[in-house]
Length: 373
Figure (cartoon, rainbow, N blue to C red):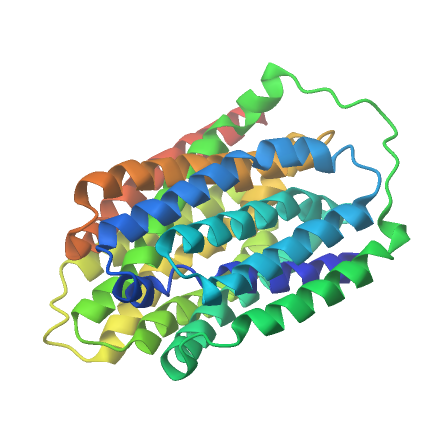
């Protein structure tokens, strides 16, 4: 079962990784300003991630997991591909929303199944998602420049049908709940520092991932270059995410969070004070990757730590740090971009300060974890 959910995670995160790097393409196609596009995507991400705690409860109780996974996986693939035929920005937003919501529905169950035997297996689950998330931007920006997204929906429909038929027949996913789920206030209290850490980390990552390609475009770089920035970051991130789980076993997951945020602040400051009109594209790419990729170091370890703190309800634990915390980050992104969203340079250069907030939350979590021993 592990390798099946790992494969599904790759496909779904690949499918939903294409929206952010298409920012320059979509804003030109539908004559939008950067703030409108940013606010639309942040609102979608906020709404879809807010539902993850609900999906976490469902994943801890649903019996026919095979049918559940078949529906949400096929829906994600289908509606992500349909953006290629969206005739207006409103239709584009509707397709993106359904794709993101379906992907959100998959994550708590996927993480629960992945970690059902060994918590370290969550590293493979997370890794596959990051690989898909890394491959999507460079592919979609190349495809948009070369083919104007034509024909993408055909491949999406065929793949969605194949996934639905295949997974609906995998009855070994079926699950019987052995004990009644109990959630206490103390359970959520144990996750509170992690929640704020992930929320601020999500806030900073959302800024960099959406405005990074737009900033590259302002500097005269190609659409593919902007997509490549995200792909390179996520390639580095998948190595760091996998390493984070195993390093966390030695020094503690809370320390991983501190290291992750400290690196983001350091390289974020370097990015903000570098004049990229005077340096090569390679320098821009290197600093951007060094700034954003440390966020992935704690990506798997935070889920492992959450499940360790709520062993009776792993789906709920996963949804709080993968969904609800991300929704808080998206809410901050939405409010922040509503004020400053058209100032692309300011938005990307504020990454270091927002990362400083995640560092403060990481220190709080580190102190809390020490107090639990």
